[in-house]
Image 1 (tube, rainbow, N blue to C red):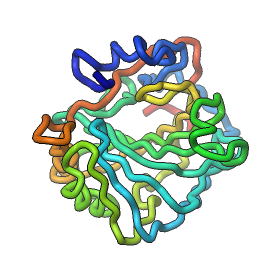
Image 2: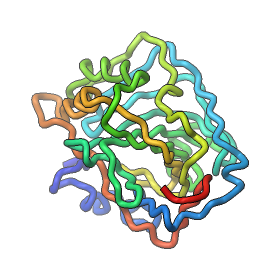
Image 3: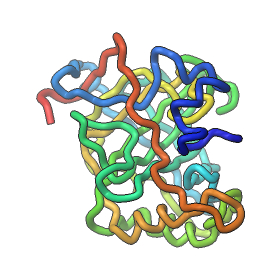
Image 4: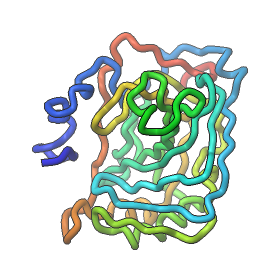
Length: 261
């Protein structure tokens, strides 16, 4: 059986096949804001986003999530990053209801969903596949999602979910889309730490950047995600597709801003 989120193949079983999942720098984590360390260097070098519009985009139902691949050269710099990181894809994790679903938690608080924008180090490596297992290979933006107002930038994604309802389905959308619309208004306030992919193979190759500001998706937009199926027939819906927080160990969480939440 492949990995998943059930009792038989869920996160507590992953290390049997994917040994990295038992590592000491795993993600997600709970961000204890009383333990974060303010670093002025992070504030002095704000995140620089240069995302280019996609004239078309490809969305897919992986059976574990909703994923959109990026074709154009969209880049991320600044903050805790050395060099340039290129956007490869984005995907989401969500719960069966609004009181849980995010992978990271903040002072123990969970959110309805979490968006991950996955980048690879194009200053040092030639491809995502080359970078994915390297200690400085990846950078992932984590955005907390609350239930609330409709998210204008996520509308096209919701429309696309109807065409990828079953596992393995892929849909190419001939419509311009700029990933920038998914980002929070405030990108200056964030926490950052070194961790891992939150799905197998769980390589410890990620510089995580988790934004303080959450965004809102409407109940209908969240329901569109919860209506996706985890099989290529009439399987169960994809819900609770999140890994619980992992031990932080001796890692430090750095903050680009002073104070606690």
